[in-house]
Image 1 (tube, one colour):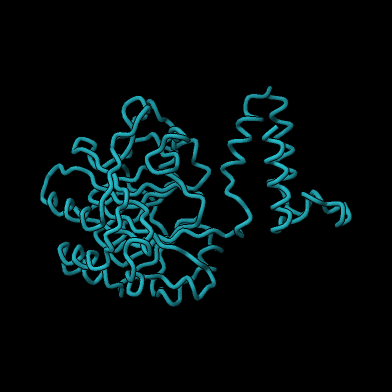
Image 2 (cartoon, rainbow, N blue to C red):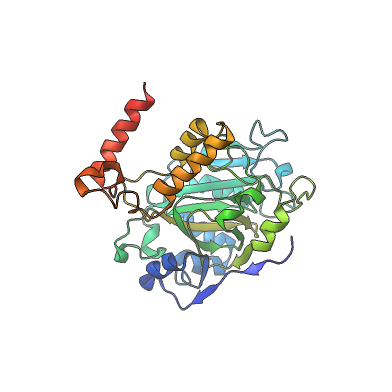
Length: 339
């Protein structure tokens, strides 16, 4: 893969001065160099893999958790079989310590099996870990439950997440390759339902892209950005930005923080997209264009425009969505969908 534009970097950030407002205002990826350099796990990682594993074992409460296992021939890429009808790995269960033991047993293998403990809630399985390894979201009034990702040289195929994300590299190194949301068509997303990790992923193998099958990928690369995180570094990934993540060492640990910018009564938009595919996508082209204009007016345009000419008491669904209106809309949609 060719060299891509670097991601902008900020230095001198600390967990107690986490610039959340500035990051959201920037609206683009930002590397936060060294923001986690004082973490206990980062210090252990600098001493060695065995010390980092021992540090994690010290917080393990023995809870059985799911993790992914793939044979050596998947080369660290949890993905699909050749015809996209099944995944190329299996889900097993074990404690964090058991996963660490299995990883340790294959550290020297040239072609190890793939082990990937993904998106494990820290507080549930590693109680006490956050005391010495955390970003200070609470000072901003944001409640976040961090997740931890543990594995070997795993490739997380290019995907997007709805929430904003700060990903903190704690052990090993990770290469991130990012693309703005409008590049979705040039990334050729796979199935929506069967996915390796909950979100549709790019069909392109970044290590061996096929230009005949995926000609638009060259344009995606022209708009792509890349960085390598060292232990203690973090990356802000704005909502909906596509990101491909590659673990570069035999043992890698990342801690991430997802948070939304909307109140709890605003649902994730994915359900609206499914409904639109069901109700609009297959209509005649003229009807689709008419609905495009309708969506531009009611959804993608100025939020206040559609109801601005009406008195407040007549706006109903055109008014700003508060918790009460959200309940009304939800009840109306459930009733209509159940007819």
